Length: 505
Image (cartoon, rainbow, N blue to C red; front, side, top):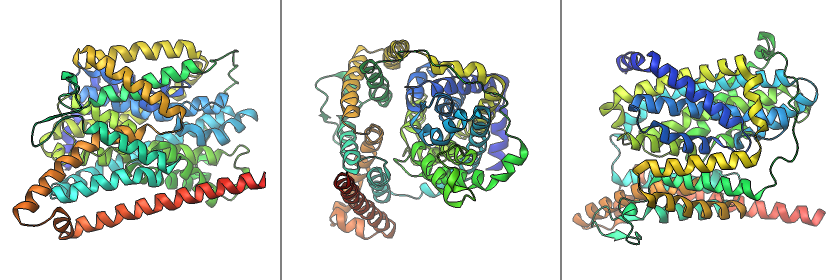
């Protein structure tokens, strides 16, 4: 493995690639800092720019966007109390309070250092763990892989931040969309409506652009926009100083580990990690009463966790083809565009591409930190972009990206169709990430189930008997049932707590 890492450094750190990583990190930071633009939307809009790049250049650019966008959301949350991304909501709770006290620079500096540290820890785990997971995954057969995918989908409801029922319904909708196209074994067409664009299945990139970009355009148009000019407070010095950093060093480490672990879980995201990181920081804090009133440690706890998710989420995405969240799903679209099939063989057959990509993430974290320390007073101006201008810009980029994917007008109509569905779902409180996970994981589950049924039939067994004969499969079956039971219990508790609050009122 070490020889592959050393060989990958040449491609990862060559001048042109470094320039693209820097451009991606800056663009990601700008998009992430813009209210109304999420990390997933940033990725969806910028993936089309990589069509003409080499695989290493394209993936390195997208890696820079990913890292920069997750960090960038903290800028607007700290300065104007509007989170640029969902992951920055936890940062806002203490970051904006520090700004009101005239300590915006301290909060922003804490966000930069924590994001950089958390991001590097996550990528380090990715570099070390992904090849080991890939090597183990080579021995996984269809039965095990089917239940791994089912377990991944079941965790969407178990660990989601909103309604468990709505999360599972969205996942089922994604699985239905994933069934569109040619049957993996018989070759028959399903739900294609005689559209050639659907013969190969629902295009993931088009789905991501439609669900996240077009639905966001409609969402922005529904709002009132920015009615008045907002003043950006004086930022001041950004460097928090070594004494301040060392005072909360345990929070940096703890939140980075938490974020990496959360990133490994399919269906979880940086928003969940940031809240867990902040909550654990408060639990171990010597001054928990400061939280919510302007705690530097609270900012660090949230930011180190949400940026560590980047590396963690790419472990299952690259080794098993199971994205940890919607952003890594969008990045998987970038892999597919360049003819790379996520899975364990990626680290043996495409090592010359995948290792430079992973190493480029170290540079991406460094570049967004340098860009923030060097030019935050200019980057911060993006928080003032009116929503009308933002909606029009996103719409144009979405249409160009959807058409450029395969030069088919049908893709544009599919994008609009999913955009409307995405808008309706968002307005009614349904999450969108499980839909994308379903579109990606559905075909994987179906093809492996078909293989299991064929093998079981040849041995004179039912599929369930075949599943029960395998210890690893039984373990994942138990984990799936446990996740679903936890989802039901969590939903019941949620309703009971809601009724209790209404009774008190």
